[in-house]
Image 1 (spheres, rainbow, N blue to C red):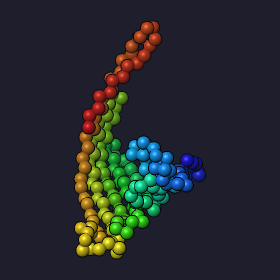
Image 2: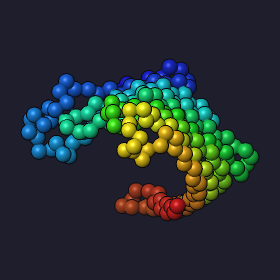
Image 3: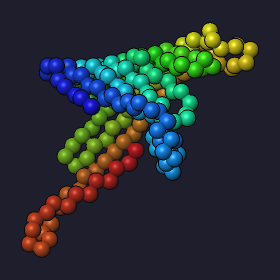
Image 4: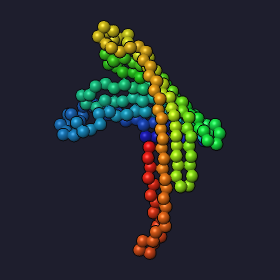
Length: 195
């Protein structure tokens, strides 16, 4: 695993795991095979972060351990998140993601996924607690490559869209009390939250 900063805003990360024998857990006759993680993850990424903007681009791959089915790889996956304060009461934001998914299995399609999630929030924060009301619209579009799949035997479509709305109401209160226990001073904190 490696994480490094290129400058104030840019960073890189890599998490690469591999093994020479994907069946070693089966070959050893381990009783823990069914309980073990069946994938080793490989990831390389480039990220940018500032006060209002976060961007990341990753390449994610898997090494399959044992007798398990192939899994999708994200080659690449890019995410962008932007937030800004419209005025003293309202925050605007947008999250987006673009990813290309690939698999070696001929009976499954490769696909491109685009997701966008604009939101409007009314955050209210004080020393005694906070309240957040938020509304978002989530739109996701898949474009699937079905050229290797028999259209007569599948219910998959080349283009799939989904749009849903999400609302959130979150609140928290903060209660604090100075307390002496066996001659030592402590602050007791109780923070009930509801969403």
